[in-house]
Length: 146
Image 1 (cartoon, rainbow, N blue to C red):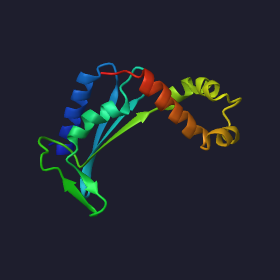
Image 2: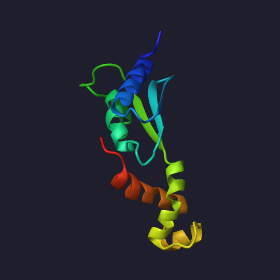
Image 3: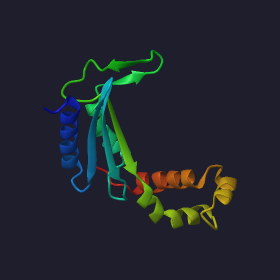
Image 4: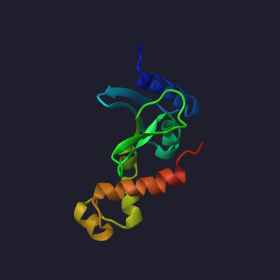
C-alpha cells in the first residue's frame, strides 16, 4: 500500500508532466519519523520552466508550513487531497551556468573566472556571481513562460 506522500508524489508528477511536457522531472517521496516530504528535481535550461513556476504547482501538495516563532508545524486548514508535510523543488543549474560562463565574463568585463578578480569587483564568490547572473539575465529574461 502506498503512503499518502507517495500518492501525492504520483499526482504531482502527472500534473508537472501535463503542464510542462518537454521537461523531465524527478519526483520522489520520503516518509520518516515525524513526517514526510516530496522532492522535485529537474535540469534548468533556457527552455525549461523556472523554479518559481514549478514551485507554484508543487506547493499545492504541501499540507502546511513550519512556524519557527512557535516552533511547530501548522497544518493548512484549507488543504484538501493528498500531500506531504514538506515539498522541495531543486533545479540543477550546473549545465546552464557552464554554457553562460563566457557571457558572464563579458558582461562584467572580467578577464578570467577567478575568485580574486570576481570578489574584488562583485564582492561575492565566483559561483555565487555566476549563479546570480544566470538566474537574473538568462532564466528571468529568456526563460520559458507558460
